[in-house]
Length: 337
Image 1: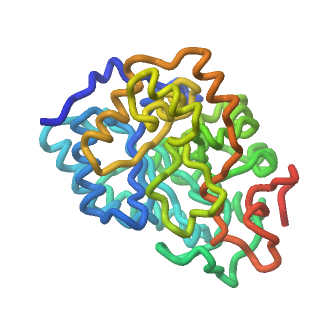
Image 2: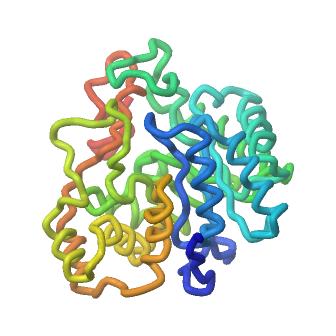
């Protein structure tokens, strides 16, 4: 029988409207390892266990199965719609005029919802690659970030809010220079920024910038994404769960190093969205933030351990003439063209 975590013990984070949402969510990116059925079953078990924030995306190719689960948990009386906070994302090939609306309609249909709680622009480029493609793949139509193109996509997201199809809109995989360029142009501000965040890659400048602008950070790869696709792996990558500081704290608390990463994330203020199809793991991923917090000294030890090791480099989105994956992330402090 699935352990059920008391909702009152799960920390919450406030959006700019004052509405609060859970401080931990359930990721649904099955990578190249888990099919839609396995992911959907984990969502069912996760909601039964106490997850209320479910992080979805069109490109994960499993929203239709997740929709069946959402319908099932509501029919079974496990939750009501108002209890859930469901996110989705528009993929890069659907940035064109009218296509964001089309993409959202498809996600609503697949998820069997009348409204999505938070809808993200998944990447700030229209640069498309096929799911599961090789890390060396390049699309000849790829191009650098364009404020004008991005704002055309964002205007469509704002229209979705106007039409009541989504409640909040968010950005993902942004940088401080990109945010500085687009935030003054937004009629509706982003409620959240989804970004890679884990002890080995803490992005303090971007994190602090988001918080200062009333944007809630949501952290993907919170335990270093050990199941990420091969195309996203490089020889210099650091495994968070093997960092000495994390291992030492885990031994002190008598828990798995992955849970130290999640405790750190929730206590720091981002919303981690760990993914697992294994019930003991997804239950403990949520339960760990309700008990035995890390000390201030442990939090400081992890802060100092930051390795600035980006795992999801996005190299498949590079354009002709780009020097390397660093160009996607504006490493020089200005938008790279």
